[in-house]
Length: 78
Image 1: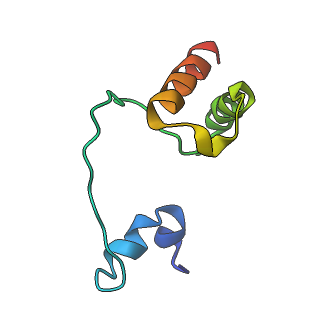
Image 2 (image 1 turned 135 degrees about the vertical axis):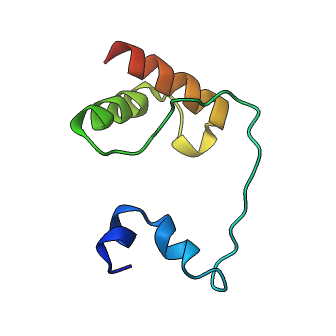
């Protein structure tokens, strides 16, 4: 990944090389509308920092539903 658009949006690199990567879609039964965990601006970092601070067990033990709950809680207070 060397082109600016590949660095900014890494999916561009993968989609340009379909023979090198297996891209899969999956269904999510949770309502994740409006949820983004990308860090693009300072406020995003504040929310992500609050999510991490709220974790009381190792990060790999969290499922998507728990992460969504933590994110929404952190977003509401920032």
